[in-house]
Length: 257
Image (cartoon, rainbow, N blue to C red; front, side, top):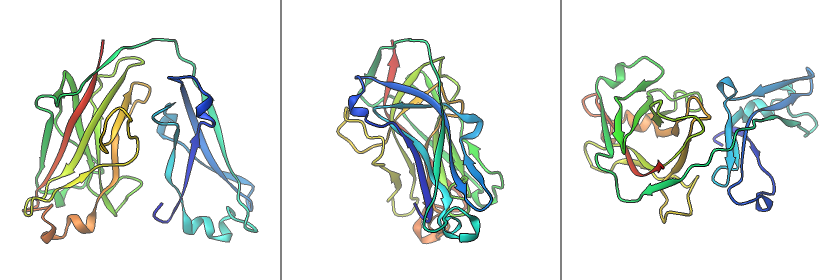
């Protein structure tokens, strides 16, 4: 992906697993340095537990290692056209607790947050969060990285949707949503309609996600939401008078009964 080696851990032969299967696991992925006889290891911060299921049967890193580094013989990862990747997996047992989820298929009331960020070019912190907004008794917030998160540093604006500490133990909440940067000149907004994590329950190509209490820093979004060169091009219309308008729109959300 964009000049990087991508590496993922996936559940094999999912077709043989029972309906509603789920595996909770934390893991490390690594590549072997054949010159120094050591491993480069990558894992989520804090060893976050990932939920593997029908919707997400694989987890990993789209930008595991820069391709230039991987192909550099002196780094030791590719020797005689041979490389070694691996994974260390820890499966976490959980007590059985079933939930009945009902979906609110009509668009919820007050479901859009418009976040006005002024003096955008002067922001110097790595990330910023919006005020909270409530949809169907659940609080949400937007999070942006003005200069990109770790995966898009100095390349793109990163935008994420986050729950606000309302997830109960072992609770899942399903949400279908849109994220956008408003175009203040042409009205042609930058709106992400991803093609990953698509639910077969809905006839749309809008991102759908499970928010889970298993992950302490749960958020969903896009590291490369909008290229910085497009953001700072005045004629594009995204940044006007040094003001940016970021929006989140919740289209469908589940309720625990």
